[in-house]
Length: 236
Image 1: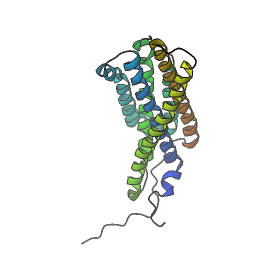
Image 2: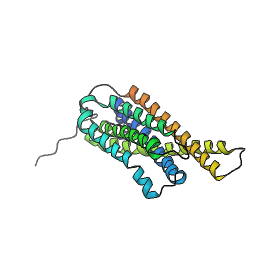
Image 3: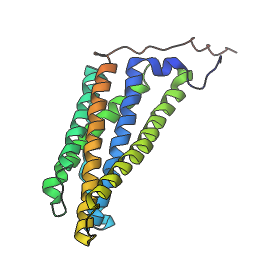
Image 4: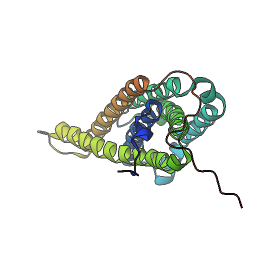
């Protein structure tokens, strides 16, 4: 095709391709937090919808703080390579800490530290990835690059949610297999499913850190456009 919908040079650039991978991986992992942690806080711990929303506020504040610092002060000095893998590692650690939850564990000791780590990591990932994915493209490819960011996040979120939900359901079913169903057992089985999902999400972030560390290049690179230059506007 002379005018493909997705020009290959948009995704074959190592920094831009690594950014798309980062966005997709982060989407897969973060949707797992929202889904399973919401179930845990409401169904297992008995929080209301409002209380659950407030419980997520520290993560939102962490995302905003990390994204702001990365965008304004850090990315232009370091480039994306140290930031995105570090963000993945922070999110993976936060996910791993979430596996400590139990039926009666506290929010401040078992949930809050994880939310802060995940928020800091996610903010660093998204800020560095979006800036890198849309930087240096020709004006005619800017829409494609931006659309690929959204597509990567949506595909990652959809695949991640489906995969983690299947793994969590399987773990819960295995936990109750051969036992007499009782309310307390069902609560424990649900937590077992959430813990399994958090472990897999931690693995996704760890794998993303390795993949992005291999794809992204070191240093700050000047903007490079691809393709033929845009025609100059005609003068009257």
